[in-house]
Image (cartoon, rainbow, N blue to C red; front, top):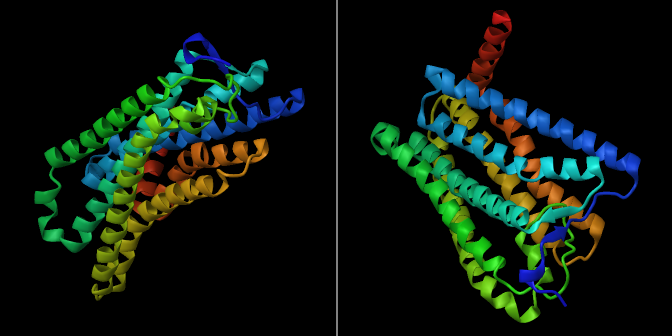
Length: 309
């Protein structure tokens, strides 16, 4: 029997106990993390420096890149360090900070993806009102609202989770701190305190997904009325990357819910890897794959930098 006030550290689930495989895990995560840093760094630098990309769509993409960069930075480096130094421990405050940052960035990303669907809806369905509805001040206010709402959501969940009495030790079944793993350590009767916030979060999340779906229903209807093939291509080149990012976000979350009832250490690690590492690692490729304007700007940024060396 343990109490949350007496716990000073938690024990995370290692990917492997074999030293050679631990080093392999370190190298694999290092490669993924450096690739994400490079991809996100190029996108952020290019959008910030290229005047042609100072539009609402790329402003929101810059915010999304910052969120993805923070999202992967709160889990992967700590996991790399644990594998390199063959340790499982994370301090109580470090675990609380990890939970807070994870919920904060995940919530803010969901709200930002919802805003980005509204941006695409206005750009295609109401192009004449685009400058009015999505001026620079409105874009800043919407982005700030996404960050602030995510911060508030994370504050409520973190405070509620870490105020629960823990009766089942301090060993988690994930390679990073997350709310479901901590709830498994809490006393069974204390679930209801956090359940209230979880229900509200599920309702808000469902509302965001419904808004995104309705926006794209209107977008596809408007695209069907575009007479030229070039107009179709331009509309899809700006919408499909965002829709792919949303689909990846939803599919990994659905996969987590589907396997949540299966008790298996290997499945727990696979699931946590899918929703904490894969989306931020894949998003840079998705965002640039069907966006020639962004690809050209990134290439110019890279060649300009190399010529200066």
